[in-house]
Image 1 (cartoon, rainbow, N blue to C red):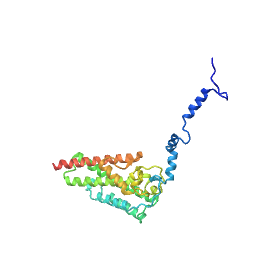
Image 2: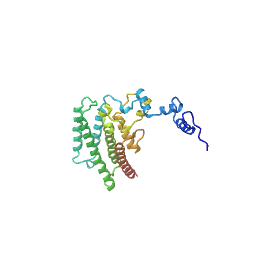
Image 3: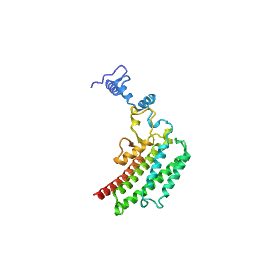
Image 4: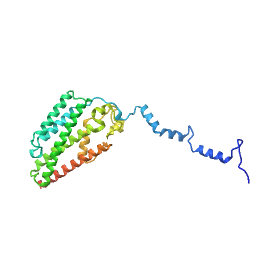
Length: 272
């Protein structure tokens, strides 16, 4: 039997071949494979992004956000609830609109400049105001749907469309306010960029060439999200990322679909 040929160090050729084969599997420094592997390394990518100043949009500190838009749509929601007939509102008819008016005045008193402030009392008043608007509109929607199902509502097609439209618009405003307060902890927390991940992903967050580098979402953006979800019954260009955002959009879709489907179907039936 012949022995394997050994080198000068006493090691056989088979062991040398194994070492050579194992070394060949590892990219050599300076090779194309090593360059590609380093290029795709997540840590390297993150470092390159930070070096280039490409911090995610939701992690950038922003300036004050005007609050006059919120006050305006809240006033619109109150007016829409006032014009509803008494049988579609909580008795007495003036109770919830009066409460909403007092809350709106309190908001204007706490924030006379109309700018974003990191006040816990201001945020509490805003959440209470949104909850009251949502509650009042939910009661009106339920009373309208009950009347449609029982046949006691909808003798006048124009009046039915007017009442259904007022409830639908108020619902769209209410959910726009909820989205505005929910995304990354509300406007004050968004301005500080304290949350690691967003609840909603806007196109401007993904493509920096679509907007200025200091772009940040405002109330109008969330009102648009609410409008598209209430009309298309699904997200369009803005994606919900967190479970709470998806559940809120799902709830709005159900309310909007039931209201529109029943009201339009009954109105068409009356016109025929």
